Each structure stands twice: as structure tokens, then as C-alpha cells.
Image (cartoon, rainbow, N blue to C red; front, side, top):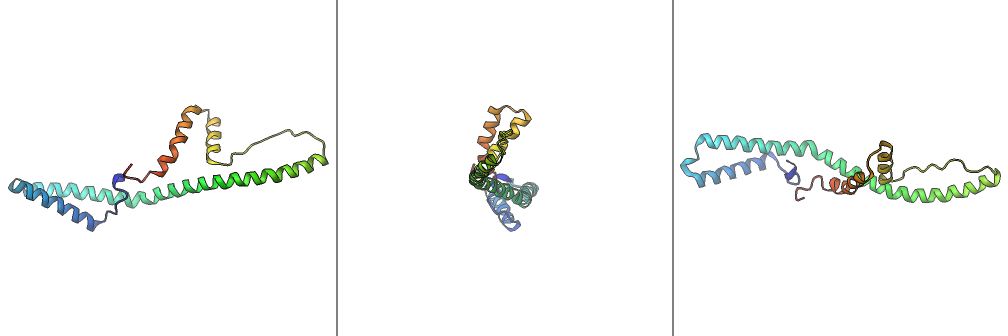
Length: 153
């Protein structure tokens, strides 16, 4: 079903496809293509067509949600970086004012992940995963999500 995800399989198109295959078999095999064989192959084709319709109906929304979420996460990562840069500038200005007010040294420096990649590395470090392996996963993740529904891949 996923290999034909980009084809709009409908019951009507499925019927046309099934009948075309059965007619070709009937034409090529002649009398050797019995009624029982025609019914059996027709039933198999009906099952395959139904499976394609089911996969498209049940998983199309999920695939599109996955791709939209991925695109949104990547766009937010860019805007989060821009926002972080702006916040850093504001933070530095306010920090200078605070330093003038109080002469106490800075005790904590917490860096919060602002992009998917940073959060991915942060979670991997917290869970103790091998960073080389996780880098390979991260490297492939964009291709996996972007081509989840691409039957030509």
C-alpha cells in the first residue's frame, strides 16, 4: 500500500484495474484460464485493491501530520534561533544593568535547547546514548520523514 501511496486508488479505479488484468489473463491463457482461476485471481486482486484503499485512508492523515509537524519543527528551529539571538541581546543588556546594581558573580549558566537538533542531542546525552549512532539517526531523520510517502524512493 505504501508503494502506491501517491496513486489515488478508489473502488471504481480498482474495478477497472482488476477487470483489465483478468481480461489480459483470459486473452493470453484462453481456455486454460478457468472460471475458478478467474474467481481466485479476482479475489486476490480485490484484497490488494482493498488493502491499498485502506492504507491510503488510514495512513494518509498520519503521514501528512508527520510531514507538517517536521516542517513546523524545522521552521520553528530557525525562528527559535533568531529569537534566541534577539533574547541574548536583550539578556546581555539587562545583565549589564543587573551587574551595575549588584556586584555578585554569575553562578549558573543554563543553556536551553532552541532547535530540534539541539534537543535531540540533549535527550541523547541525558539518556546516555552513543552520540555517533545518534548522529547517524539525526542525519537520516530528515530524509526518512520527507520521503515517508514517496513511492518512487
